[in-house]
Length: 78
Image 1 (cartoon, rainbow, N blue to C red):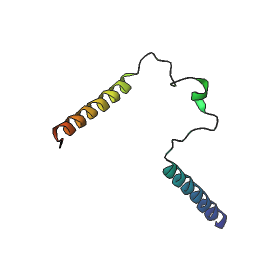
Image 2 (tube, rainbow, N blue to C red):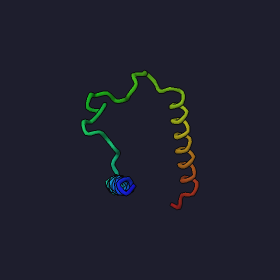
Image 3 (cartoon, one colour):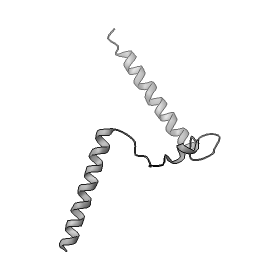
Image 4 (cartoon, rainbow, N blue to C red):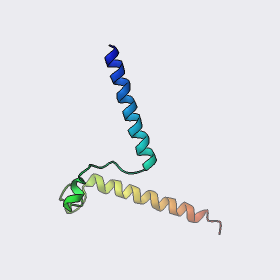
């Protein structure tokens, strides 16, 4: 049982150290070989246009950006 506890604590410390490093570097997690980007492929699928779910997310994001810009324009000081 002691080996299990020591091993568990060790793994928790390692995971915590990786999390702290990730937070301070503010970089995205990527593979060591570059993954799909090294092949010159921009996206995972080869669809000519985004799927409906992606289109809905993009529309929602655009709507939020327009609403925020309208709010900033409305409350402009200068």
